[in-house]
Amino acid sequence: MKQSGAKPAGPGRQPARKFSAKRGGNNKSTLVTPGDGWRMFAQPHDDLEYLGTIQRGLEIGALARDLAGNYLQVNGDIRQTLNASRVETALRAAKPKATSYVQRQPATPSKPVVVTVKPRRRVIVPPT
Image (cartoon, rainbow, N blue to C red; front, top):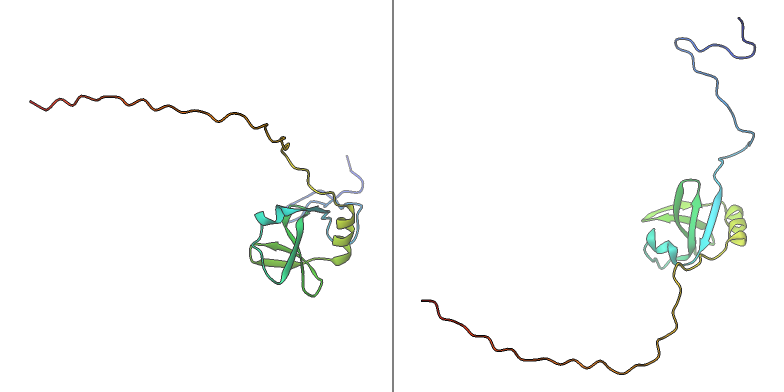
């Protein structure tokens, strides 16, 4: 029986590839989280202003802006220049990361705790 459209994969032949409907560059979605999370990925530098974290596909790092106004993804000492329009779009849609803890109200002042130390007598027996 003959199949229409697909050629069988034989020796030295690559199987047919499937292409996605999206055209153009890479399919990396950009997610920006403003806040202090950038500290996990980079050290503070005088020439950079850190804005938060950025995730592009499986890559994640610190989002920074240099003195010239370029957006960068920083991982350690590695700096990758980013597309400014994509980053600005992601920044407009970004929501600050919610804190994972609940701040408690300060406890009402209570009486100080009294600690009593009782001296104990120890008997040392000389060796015989």
